Image 1 (cartoon, helix red, strand yellow):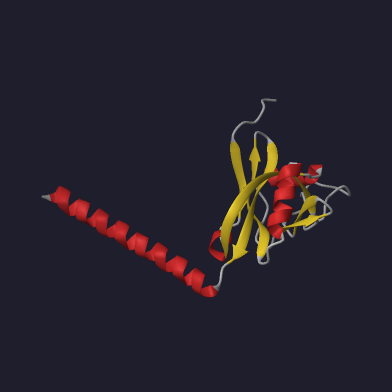
Image 2 (tube, rainbow, N blue to C red):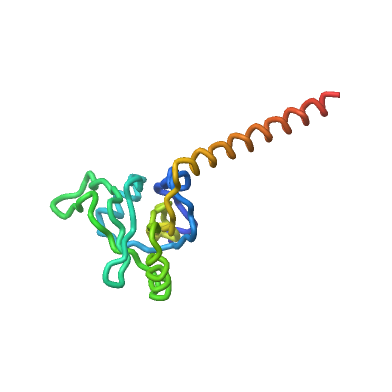
Length: 160
């Protein structure tokens, strides 16, 4: 069988960038069982309630939903079990130092295969207040309106 190359997105947490200020991102490997990998290859996963936690010098991913594999038998996994993340010791130590600040959390942004291996993009993030979310939405809306106005002006310019 040919070796996989490239990046194949499985799931992403789109609302995370709306709910959090992303301070830093990390690419982590995942420790998975065979049925979890097969379920991921079918493109089934949800990062919505997921979060990362540092426990005993190791990083763990909680509440990420990888559904049971349909053809699995008694060896099937539980859908929301905690999964160990693979990171370099220096990165973990840096995270521990940053996590001492209050209000910071680890949020999974994307789950994907990179060169055949399951990876998760983990973000160090600070929760946004409600007015920050409204401000972000307003900026996006203003940017869209400006782009539309520029496009309309270009169309009028070409029409002459």
